[in-house]
Every structure is written in C-alpha cells, then in structure tokens.
Length: 170
Image 1 (cartoon, rainbow, N blue to C red):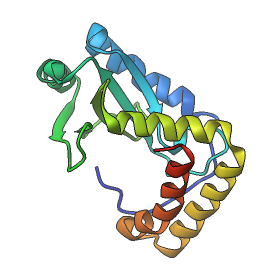
Image 2 (cartoon, helix red, strand yellow):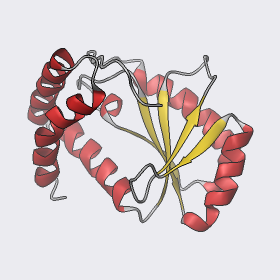
Image 3 (cartoon, rainbow, N blue to C red):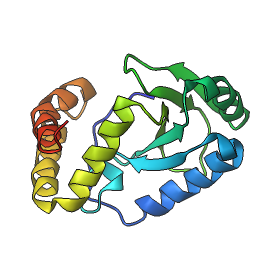
Image 4 (spheres, rainbow, N blue to C red):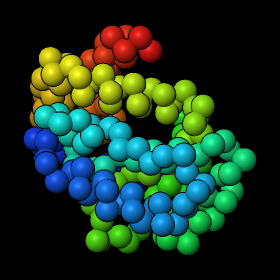
C-alpha cells in the first residue's frame, strides 16, 4: 500500500484510539501468537505531524510462528507481502477495511533489529519535544516540495531521521 499523495497533517488526538480499534481486531485473530502489538511511526508520537496512516508492529516470539500468523491474518483480510526489502519486518496489505483507519501492518520477531529501531525512534521522540518540532517542520517542508513523489519525500526527510537515530544511539 504505497502512498501516492504525500499529505502531512497535525497530530490528531484520535490516532491512539484508531490504533486501539485495529489492535483489537488483530489481537482477536492472533491472540497468544503475539508478544505485543505496538503503535509505531509518526502517528504514535503526540504533537508530531504525520501522514494520517497508523503504523503497527505485531511482535511475535520468533519467525517460526510466521506461517501461523500469515494464515490467521489472511482470515481477517490481510495479504502477506514479504519483507519488501527490509529484514526483520514482514509486511501485510489489505483491500477493504473501511471501518478502520488507513494503516500499515508489519510483523516482527521480538529480536528484530528493525523492531528495536521502530521502538527506540518512537520512544525517543515521545521524550524529546525539541526533536518533534524539528522533525515536524522537515516533514511539512518535504510534503510541500514533493506532494506527488513519496520517494523524494522520504529522501528529503532522511537526514533528520538519521540524526534522530544517532541521538537514539542506533
């Protein structure tokens, strides 16, 4: 589910509630196969401007459970897409879930480096309002400069993301 138009909006207090709705559906399907279900990405950080898309990491004990997870997620309308070139993060798409906010769903084993990056980035931003302000500004600029080009938008914000990762010691 690649973004076509780059739209960045102010933080919305409804995003955590929207995450919880999605989480309930996923947990009902996966139950004990999950270690946790994490709200990650920009919509998980209060005050951060974001594309209005919820990013979710479903944490599983290890990849030996992935076939079961793929099957159970398929039963509730998610299609497995592989890791899309990012090790330690398996992507899923869906076609018709109008009752849920637009979201990206990933499954990660609990020892995944990518999961650790997502959580460290989120947790750092949640405790560093100065970084939220700067990152929000870069995101607004990028969306303004590249409203029709997600790849250019991502490239534009890459330097600030790398700077934040360094501050997270990643």
